Image 1 (cartoon, rainbow, N blue to C red):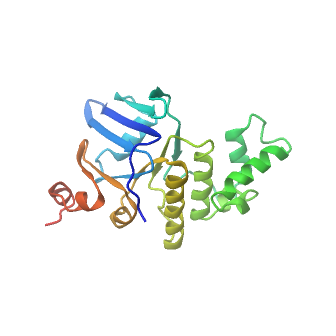
Image 2: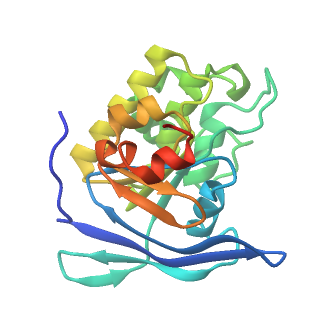
Image 3: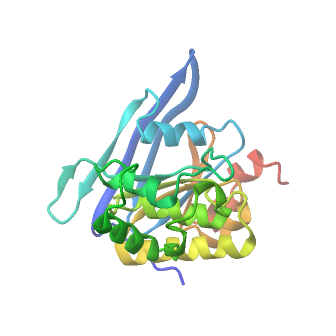
Length: 243
């Protein structure tokens, strides 16, 4: 099912990302070439710097280095558009805010406490439909299942279509069927939009099954390659205690 990808439409390079917090080195010269049309999964033990790397890419922590996005069609460096799906969002059960309210506030300047705008409502519904989540539009955020919430967050993160989609433990708390559906959606995004996707995961079985490329992080990139190449490496075995 996997296809061999080359950087055809665009190219994202994470160059020499280093982070120090309180004098402690959290990341050291991290270099990653993110190919379009591929799912790149970042793995590592707790404290390896995975979440910090995502925050650096998103510009949420001070860091050295840079992220360069090049449109290969005209060979020009452009400002990168990033979509982000967090591991979880803090919502209270039965909170009155609906999916429409959240989505509309992201794509429209119209205050959401006013009467629903028909044009915006249709736009939101069409985007949700791409992810099989159109029936959630009037549901309260707090009433969504884990799978429904992730579909909604994916819908928001890909409107407009980003150059790079970042996912932090996206299937945490989702059942087996929901997880399969989620990764099928990612496959469609890769194939339809040639999208670059970075996903942080602790689930090594899912990584083996779905990743095109794996990055083993331990403050720096210690191994990268196909799932087979990384999981059979001494670097992986040493860090995960496999003899």
